[in-house]
Length: 383
Image 1 (spheres, rainbow, N blue to C red):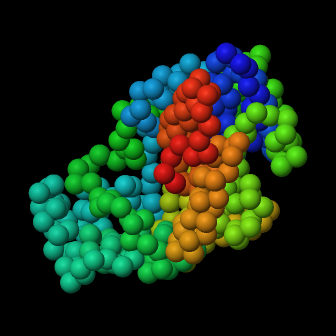
Image 2 (cartoon, rainbow, N blue to C red; image 1 turned 135 degrees about the vertical axis):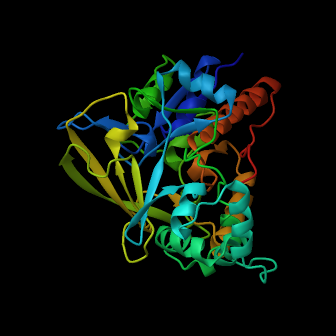
């Protein structure tokens, strides 16, 4: 086998997993990371004052039904069982999320059983709407006005910075209601948070003699010549120097709150009223219920449009962005010597388990191409 040299932009899960797979196959890898730490937006660190494990860029809950991915993360750290539950404050009252049987009965002051609740919501739904043209019509067709206005209108408006009438119907892919009292936020068989944080896991993934990690170091066009192939996990439009314009993202601002004892009494409290400027408060010690802390650290989150210097969190993917995205994807497919992966590299919102799974698939494809002497594809997913 001929040893290849790979340059990887980004030390989040995408870059780290691919780096490890290539290194274990005998190749040399250099990982470039613009931040002063690995793990990207999953970065965790101990708060020096309280010892609470902080999810620096917002809460990250690991959940998956992919056995390969589950086995993979367990190679590099201890995953502690964690069942994520979310509450929401609306109109001066606290409700359970996702919207379930208790939420419905609380809001409508009823005592419906599952069958009665299904029939009741069917009566609330707006049957005059044919093919929904936007998020609001999709919600009204599914659940009716009262549920929509209580739990979706305000939060969605704040999260996207747009009225729901301007958001595609596809964003609300399915009826987000449960006709039971189950309030676990996710329903995957594996739900956990790493005991020592996500950064520790990524550090372990990158701990290989054939991997060099360069922190606070960007990967530029000039660096490409050092390597046989590049892996790009940064923004797709940045690779092409924004030649077709910038793709849109939402970013988050965090306001820190310190207290003793409990501040909100749960891991995440959403705020659905549009008059409340922030979307949620996360109390981070509740993400590690196996630990005990006297002090507490919370972060109040506010969503806004990302500027040039902001950290991109959520791809907008509205009509204009999809048009620009098509041009970038065509350019990416024609680009030789580089593979685009991950949330930023393919301009998609991805959960951690999907990110890891796609990185493993990409690594398999890269190694197969090398073994067969074929050109390495620029994309392994339909973005």
